[in-house]
Length: 143
Ligand code: ZN
Image (cartoon, rainbow, N blue to C red):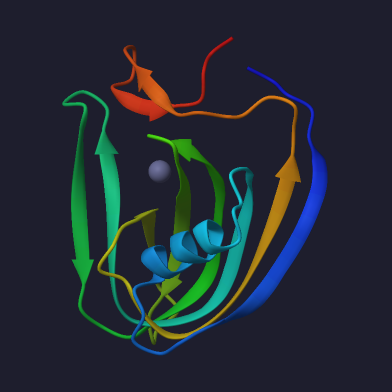
């Protein structure tokens, strides 16, 4: 599926220390009524939880990182799932030796400091996540 979008509002800001990173970004999108968009962020977290989707088992496994980490890059999108804006984000994090970890951002990742930007898109067609049988994931429609 491919749709044409035009840029809407851009919201930039800082998240509070101790907030759940994914929940805070999701709340921001919902508060502003953003149903389609892109998300990016940098900063640091006090702990992290990231997912890895095992394609053969069609199941997420989660990695809990109980240490302070830099957010090297967070990139993601916003679309609708079950009628609500949903943030889907992936994150690269680094430790004190510069080693990187990453994955599908999950709740349980706590902000130490975070600066984010959300770019809203406007489109005649809403992007609604639906179960995709070949992958077992909630994805955008194929056609
Ligand atoms: Zn993902």
